[in-house]
Image (tube, rainbow, N blue to C red; front, top):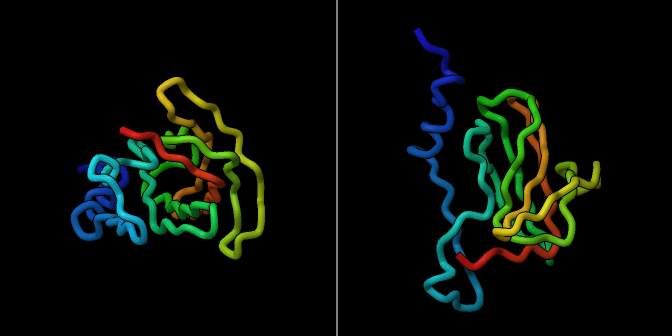
Length: 130
């Protein structure tokens, strides 16, 4: 008999029932830039529940569906001027440290308790061209 969290039931259910789809609006996007991953959550048990743009900021809301509270290293596929942890109302909670890598990715240490939410405010995000 296995455990639901170890089996990744929530992750599999979300991928099957509610795949995150992004709609690009406004200026035309070149075909080669129309696909890619902004944030790598592999192996965390976390889900992106919301992604919005406000001005020059990208707001990402994360939910820990089945992972533990041990800090993880998130891989952001691009560069940002700053990355902050904010409340649902947008109030600053803390500035997050980040470490750039040679492949253009930025890593962010973050922990979320099981069934908890975190909102990241990523300022002036510039994605890598894959």
